Image (cartoon, rainbow, N blue to C red; front, side, top):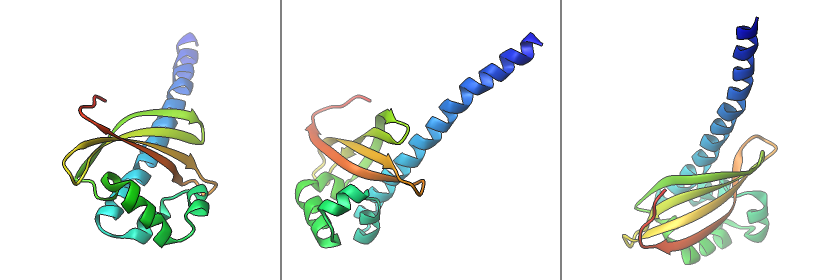
Length: 137
């Protein structure tokens, strides 16, 4: 009986972390999808990953792409990228570090904030970008 109780208690502890990991992977998929869309010049798809708050600020594809291509060149045309640390801010909000090698060959750190939408899809609410000489994840 005691073994059964311990087994079920361990299952209860395991499932929240598995659900959290699945959510992180889903959020990373949104970031990856947007970065791949930028690289492929599929601007409409890249814009589709933006959260409603971003679309209110940049209500057209042209204004969004003007902002991205002007202020976020490494994000717009990355040579490569990899995921670093993440932090769950709430069940519906995370911050994800992305290490980017820009078209210029330099390293950048992008901190993405994402929010889980009512339709169950993670959308990007913001990106903070900085140049870096070397980064560890």
